[in-house]
Image (cartoon, rainbow, N blue to C red; front, side, top):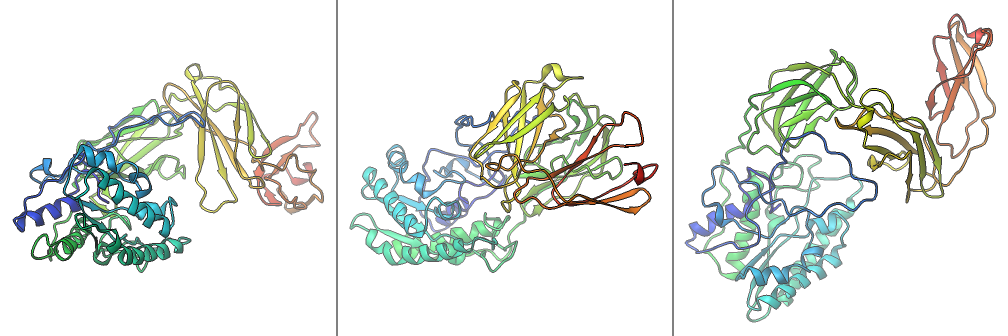
Length: 505
């Protein structure tokens, strides 16, 4: 909420305007100068190898501010999106030594509570530690600590509302004890000014995504700090007043939109829209086929089809987006896919372990398989509500072991090949239940005729089974072998098109 994205004014700038209007000489200091820059356009990147530690990356602070801002060098800061007080308390002493300051404005805490770094009592402790650690470098520094804002309601996170309110009460009650004669500490009524919270089911006036500030929210946060500066530290005469009219964000129609066939199938590019956080993408395949595999949103000014098939025709349009602030759509453009991706591996076998899954396969063959360098295994907990689809890369070797899963939960497993072009269409393997082993043989199979070419199958449920597979053969045809027809979760299915009639199967 302080770091912000390219194209934002930021509350730091709105507060700087207030300082200037109050004739207060102020200079922000800190290791960073910019906002979050959007990624450069490029093809999808190969997934990281399974359980490989991510490569350390530097803070993304190369983004610019709103084009209406002057004196960009005045907006330095020590704010990283997603950072918690639990982390910053250990970093702040050195930062305060490297960038000496007289006053620190602290807006931390939501990530601590929202992402389970700590509870309300732990956050109070961490915030006090942060202030004391900063004083080791600057004993006479003054501090303003913002109350933690609420976000729009999230089902299942009623604890977040309760802990936020509890922390804010404790902050107000205890902060007087944190001051020293030369280093006063006061609290800023940012939550009280910020028009967002659980009373709003989805969108709120102050935020573009239910939490992070839009143009109005930037002013409201700055006003909360200005109130504390005036009343708590005697800096300034009157608090910032939020304007009655605030210009909306400029998100024009993306220009130079182009589509063409590519190694991934189809690729679209367009000119970057300054100030867009992302781009919404709508696409239609073959006039309306329901193959919704490709991304519906991208961060950079490039879009690639995913898991395209030879000859598919894509119609695509895009628009610039900054949360719930949207620009106009482009017109529709089209191209035909001619992918150079590799087919999925074959003979994929999944086996449960005590707390994981072992997967084996035979490497991809056929067109473009000669450049396969990695296989990506997906695993998805089917019994955990709102579970994320996870994956990990494995080098060509024909086997993988997934560990630390939940015993007794059903997992969907799929695998795709990555070659020089990118990811090919995946194969969905047999579901697995870690910790359960091989289930018993199905019993109670009943086959009833629905009509001359449709059979209805039912059988007894097997508790804890990951799923069921079913086969068919024509016993009136010499040499007929059982052919797998598919898999399912339920203990019943209609099998259609039993030609010339169900009595043959």
